[in-house]
Image 1: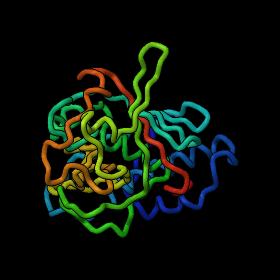
Image 2: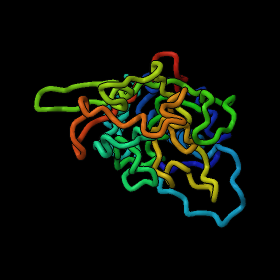
Image 3: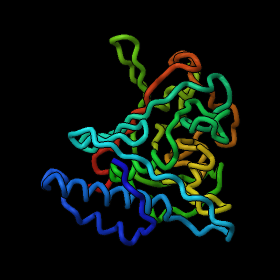
Image 4: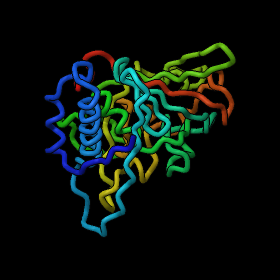
Length: 265
């Protein structure tokens, strides 16, 4: 099933008054999911105006495939709305070198400073976040990369998982960022920030830069560390080789929305 993304955020706001899919007949579930995708597209586009320029071609609408039981596939992301969780396939990319990002799109501008890479696009990740009820904090003031001020947004939990035969290991994302002789200065809190419009045109910035999940307060990312990590101390975050498989190994990032952290749709 392929659902077209709308450009009108006003139209999409009506979604929040629609009852849960559990109480609707199948045909209305399709309508509801269409509205959710519209809402996701609107939030992806609803950011500060960019300087006037030649309009860029619109990004292709992500395909959303129903898997049953409130589970959907967006690109290669599997979203479970009932469990308030998504799973993103990724690969270990950079180990034992200075890091500023947990996850970037393959071939992205900052891939050389990212622990993990994925074939997921910014639009796909943002749509998955919004389907789980995440919305930008409208009180968050604009900020520049490497700002040491706290950034705000609904909280998410991120765990890295890896399968080895019949065994699955799970490690909090923050633990794999610091080597075995270090630890995060404070408990790491991940928040949804939602990226922005690219400064040159109306494209979604996370699609242009490929920066998806970071921790140096890059306003182009979709998820950030609230307090930032390694800001002003380049090279202090370089990956925990004791916990990580070698570069190129397949892993999953599991992102869960804690109860009370997002609006129910």
